[in-house]
Each structure stands twice: as C-alpha cells, then as structure tokens.
Length: 433
Image (cartoon, rainbow, N blue to C red; front, side, top):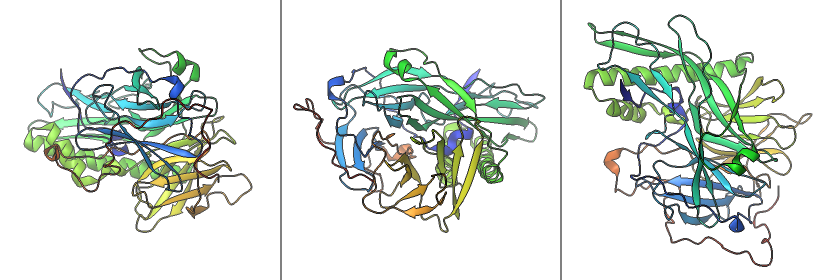
C-alpha cells in the first residue's frame, strides 16, 4: 500500500507545506510562570518559511503587540502548532499540531499506480493531531494525541473521511477544550485506459469534539479521550448553502490535484500547484468560540464567499446550527485569524492583516447578527480563547528567503518570558470592553 498526503476536504482550512526536521523534545512548562497578564489578550503562534514559530500576544483592539520569542529552545517541532487556546483554569496555552507534513488533515492511501481500475474505494484516511501545552517560560511539551472522529456507516460506493481542523480550537470557562472536524462522504472513480480519475466530495457536516479539563491536566501521552458530537448544518438554508459552496470549491481543488497528478506523476507537486492556484486554503472555518453567556458554539466563515461572510451558531443542547449572512462586498474582512468573546459577550473577530476587526452582537433580544467595525478599545473575554493564524502556504523553493508578507515574521529575539511574577499578578494591560 502506497501512502500519499493529498486530496482532503479540510485542505481549505489552512495548513503548512514545510516540516522542521527532527523529533520534538519535551520541555515541560513551569506552572509558576503561567500567563499572568492574560486578561483581555489574544495569543498567536505564527510561523515563518524556515519553520520558526513565534509566540505573540496583543490586545484585540490591535494595540500593545508583544513578541515573546521563538518556540525553539525545547527542540525542533515537526510541524507548526495551531488551534491555540488559553486554559482559564491553569492559565497555560494549548495548541494542536497536525501529524502530516502539510497539515491537510488526511492523506490518500491506494495501490500504485493511480488511477486504479474502476472504484478505488476507501482511499481517504484522516490523521490525528498532537496536543501541546505551552508556558510563559517558553516551555512546551506534547501531552497526547487526539484521534479523528469515528466514521459512520455508508452504503454502495460512498466512503467517508473525518479530518480534524487543527487551526480551530477554543476553551470554555471550566477549562474544557473544544475542536472541530468535518464529516465528509465521497466517491472515487478511475478509468485506466482513459487516464482519468476523480474524488468527489459531498457537503460536509461539522463535528465538535470536547476534551475535559481533567483529561488535559492528567495528560502525559497517548490518545486523549474526546467526545465528538455531529452538528446538523443541513436544516438551515443559509448553513446548507455555505457548506454546499465549500463542497463545490473543494471538488474543484480535488479535480485540479487529480488532473495534475495524472499528468505529472508527482502528488506533492500536484497538491502544491493546486493550492497555489486555487486559494482553497482560505475557505471554510478557521476558528470558533464558546459563548460565556449561553454556551453556544460560534464559528465564522469569512472567505468561502467573496461578497458575504457567514456566522454559524450551534446550540449545544440540540447540536443544530443556525447561520446568518453579512454583506462583505469585495471581501473586505479577509481571512479570519481568531474569534473570541468580550466581557460583555460581544463576539470579536480579528483578521489576518492586523488592521481590521469586527464585533458581532449575538445577544438574545439584541440586534442579533449586527456586523460592527472594531473600535478602540475592543478586548477579548478575560479568559480569552487565544487565537491562531491559518498556516501560510509557502513554496518549498522559498526556504531561506525572507518573505515580506509573512505576519509577525520579525521579532525572533532571545527569550523574554517573565519568570517569577513576584508580588502577585501584574495588572491587566488591555482595556475592558
């Protein structure tokens, strides 16, 4: 059986094309140096073209940006850490690392050569993610691994893959960690004599996983128990429309990869070429947050449409999604990087250019769904769920070249982590909102 890393539904959700050589070394964070100045702050792990990861924090009114340093002193990591969240109970950061080199979330397994005769069958396999704990002293360690949700029964020639979205994660107030996956049915076919093949996806279903705080606190390796619940994203017309459009764009990407692979015989090149030409990595959900008021899950899709954004509201009691559209002609908001709640239960969304942001009214009885330009000061919920940048797709030929458009690319100073906090926690440096 030959294994290929390509053709994934979750390719749209942001991932990296570089791998830092070497196995990661564990370097447990010192709990006495937890993130004391965490009120009203968003934390970001970003990466450059050499595989360096930089930990940064800032107020969500886009002021007071602070670069802590590069995550390198505990050993090189295989892939970038994403899905960052601040645990309100131990005040340490947690993040997800894809176990595949590109961070796509799944890989292709089939007998060479491709296309295989007739129906290649169950060729898409979802990958687990590693879970990392990060401290304010720069220490980080892999504490375990989360396996993808179990596949459900399909019939006929329909198969299923459920890749994890490693760029989207959040905490609730009791320290439980949540992450996303997409349950996606697909059908593969091939005609050897004609030299054609396809992998066609159906509309995805959102799946939400929960890892308890107790599990995180006790984690020391192995698989972390995770409760996965399917979201009904098909009964709301707006939700159904956006997942169907996501399906259409993913299938266009899939057709590009298959065609390029058949023509050139190099699956890595096929994926890289189609990522560069399609912009598929910007589509779909990049982050979500749990409301401290009603416990609902809120996700935000800012890129699947070019003329509108979509807010996704999931009721945890019924797991039914309701969606609201916002007009966004010309895609002014751009690529979402983080989503969190303010102290007044305003849903705050920040975007990749660091120059714009919005807050959304999600209060019952209010002007639900109002799309408001961010105004100083705007800050996240005091516990903050952290933030994470979708991975930049960087051509392997650019290794060693300084890219001018990388977010937070500067600031690779020596460690400047605080390590004592004598006299009690410092006052919050970000204003309340």
